[in-house]
Length: 303
Image 1 (tube, rainbow, N blue to C red):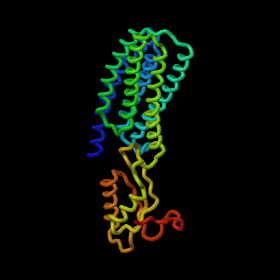
Image 2 (image 1 turned 135 degrees about the vertical axis):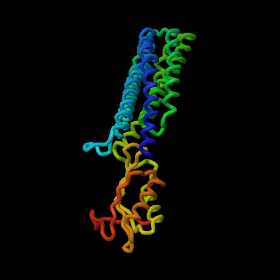
Image 3 (image 1 turned 30 degrees about the horizontal axis):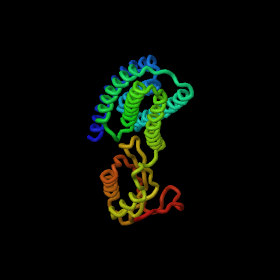
Image 4 (image 1 turned 90 degrees about the vertical axis):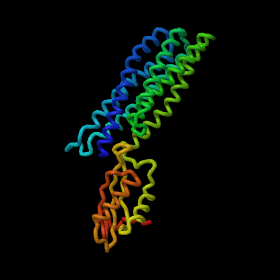
């Protein structure tokens, strides 16, 4: 049932991503043309961001489709990790966009170019409406899903870019001060940079099979030893996730010598892992005397 529930979430997430993809892809063409005709870096930066968004949303949609494929002999855990790969690539693409915007802004500061304020304002205002619609669609998805999170960050960056372009256009129309165009582009780029770095760091942590950031493994071991009377010690604990929502664990559990039903004890440990820590897939090796792996070097950590 949990597996079906997860697929139901993915189906809804996929529909949201496809809807945002259609909106973003269609308006990207308009913004590219508007940026070229008006000469605005803010519009071109936002258009470049929307181009990457279109590719990022397409990648996110593909990730949701691929991740639903069943496990096979070569990929025994299935394709869930593809979503994390998509999030990682999306984060890297955001960092590249930031670099491009900053480079172009420096060039504009050195050699200002004329900007058609009214055309820039019209395109930016239309872009804001499109980005708000796409943001609302994606924001209603699963916020803990890194794939959705990456897509939301891309669209949020576009939304900020549209706001910056509108402000720049109004200032250019009213004062004629051209440096505001690259100046606001830099401000948006720095905001995107922070979010992009968080996304890259989180997705890389999952790809490197790091433990969940919220989980204290020592505390978890102590709680399990205290809660299950027949457990004498726990060691060789490894916790990671195919995705942040799909956690996995392997560990060794040393049982007391007088344990009558080891299987019942392990079932109790598994139930506690799922109930208290959200770990639905656990592989547990039981021991009575010595650990089969480097017995002399192992030290249990009882509560």
